[in-house]
Amino acid sequence: MSKPTKNFTDVLFSHWWQTLQPFSVDQIAANQAFIQIVTAYSTPSRHYHTLKHIHHILVTIDTLQAYATDLPSVQLAAWFHDVVYDTQAKDNEERSADCAGEMLKSLEIPLSKINTVTSLILQTKHHQPDDIDSQILLDADLAILAANPVEYQEYANAIRQEYAWVSETDYIKGRQQVLERFLQRQHIYSTPLMFKLAEQSARSNIRAEIQMLNKK
Image (cartoon, rainbow, N blue to C red; front, side, top):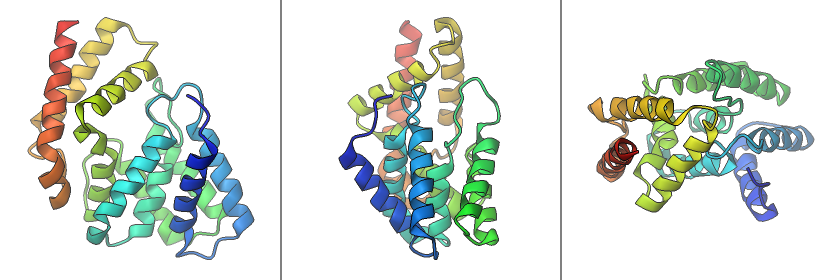
């Protein structure tokens, strides 16, 4: 993972500060938390689950914000949902939620909001949303599935890099299972706007990736 450029970091910091606007957060503490977040998402083992992914999610959430009942919590959950990411672990979401709880507590975010944020992060484990705010977060998290074919291929390649420790045979089998589960759903996207704009593109991309995997 290459180090984020200064301009991109500035854009992200602007998003971070905007996310914190509803709360009375100390600026020094906010800066320190942002540095921790940037460090976490910039580790060498990350190829897709990076700051670019977070930025893409935040932009998508902006598009879907009219649906939100608690937009600040959805945005905070986006920042922290992959803050712990280890492809060889099974508890990334739980550890990310714990990390979010600790950092948000240090920022003196109200406990009720922290509980909402951690609950939203845990929803990303199985991608089965149970309310409109989790629908927004999960739709944004899966927005990459509907990218143009070139961007989608870059995403698929980056995921493979994150699982470089898995043999080709095992990766193809596991990846196909994940992709097939998406196709078996009645809807990949839950919010009306994402379903309208992205559902068919996502399904087309997923089918194309499965075909490519079958040829290997």
